[in-house]
Length: 272
Ligand code: KIV
Image (cartoon, rainbow, N blue to C red):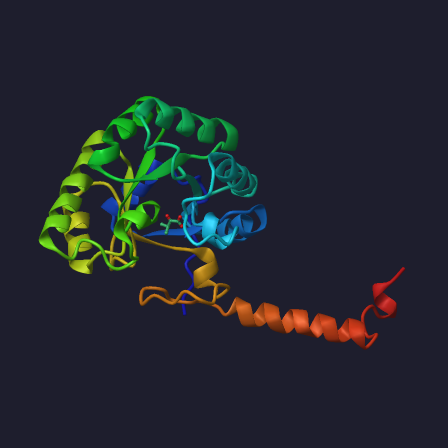
């Protein structure tokens, strides 16, 4: 197995992501919500770190991403930013912080940028939120779009199944990706749509397309705790697990319990 170590230690910027697409270099993106994990994955060389609103599920144990608040996203964003030197850091705008109106949207985005020092924000939606997108971009804040399965709309869909399988929804997605690109978004995440549609979008657009459960694209994103095998009850087809940290942590904790119970920890060298 060959390990990819980035040759270039410069900070990853929106401009560099577009250059990566142009030269066919794949973009890697993972989520992180805290200082320690963000430092590990930044030093490992990931290009983009997403402070996803999946923190609602992964960190707080909520069933959906809807309950997480702007203050909580800012807390996670600040923790991640303190650790990261190279990767671009994107903070998700949480449900309710931008859908109401564009004035509220830009105020929320400005809070994220001012308080976390992140590089940019991500938000879900196309035509429905285009006024907010334009206003945030006018404030000089770069936006990563998110279309296909949009977890903040789960109550509208009623299911986490593959989106845009029917012509009408695929057509709407095609219109939305063009709208977002024309407005000035620097990249778009496409979640859980047919690979063929992703390929079409990636070929039509100049900006990078990052896929999750969407087949090959200009880059890929996964939820860190899923790909490390820490989460147990989530096994969609697209999820490749690169470690089994649930087992590794369980064994470590059981060994610790055993050592304390049988008086083998701490030993003479582990005390003052
Ligand atoms: O919040 C998140 O983790 C995301 C990814 C699934 C793209 O939006």
